[in-house]
Image 1 (cartoon, rainbow, N blue to C red):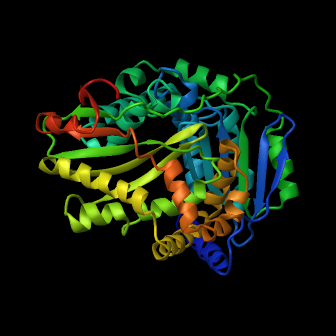
Image 2 (image 1 turned 120 degrees about the vertical axis):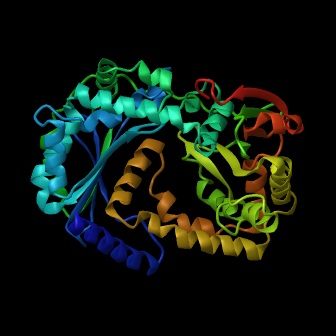
Length: 460
């Protein structure tokens, strides 16, 4: 493990040096389609003897219906043994080689990721292929993982900052698939057994709608042959991926969800509304504008709420972007007795963004900040592999990367005004407050029509 950790550091230093030397562009890659229709992305990086893999499948939470947590549990269980390796054998083999590996599911897709030394490809790649095509879903290991998940979910609401975002998502999205809690709730997870996991796997894991990205020290022609030999004959019938409707978050009035936690000494809050899809052409430009509002420590929100008023230790804003839409939110917390002041200050900052816009000097600062933060996001082979599969899942191409600097530098004060007007919601805002309802119920109605629920109630 130490040797591979050193390699990750070295790779980061090499890529950082190349990125800072000039405008960052996505390194060249090749896309091929296997005989069974699976997409394969290959990017050679020969600086260090390391290979990273990212494989994605249309098996995210949008496919699970009301069985919240099923997609996540299925993805987690992929490494619970295979047709020819027990869970312990699989773990011992991969860990002895210093390989890093993981699996999990999000809203849109499930992912298997791994990084390993090039010299170990003959051992590791066949194991990863077997994890994809023939997981065993050991029932003992699954039951343990399920029990841990239920315990975690039972305790998670003791820390409101960990759940306020899900309350906001569910409040705004309602019955839309994006409103589902990806990790589930205790009751839905309790109802999931190994048979349900196997059925979900059989319905959603296969070459159809799936992609693999490999980045690292290999020859493309040889890697195509390897992957084709391991996965090219994998032909299973899976369900057609769900068509997720556009997320319509245009509300006719402001609303407030007040989540009562009687012993709370603070109020956690989200304020926001409609956001954007991940493929939106203004995605990059909006990151610049949001940098000023709430995207860095010196943002307007953090300055006003933390530095100038002492109402919180942190405030931020941002866009959560999915394939068919997303949300925008301003997020913070404050002492219970300061709830009204903190909410009012947050709204004042948003109003300032709309009424004053962003002056040229501050815009330049945000542009430089984002350009400085951007390249390091893609400085490892693992992050590049994930980027390639993200491009596949969210329907955007390398122009997002290659045109980043041009897009950022091309922003003007007038263009920023258009972005603010179009994408940063101002009317009919949606509020979620998690705190002691007895103390803040009287002010909640000031911000919109109030719905109240107990944090102890099942779900969100």
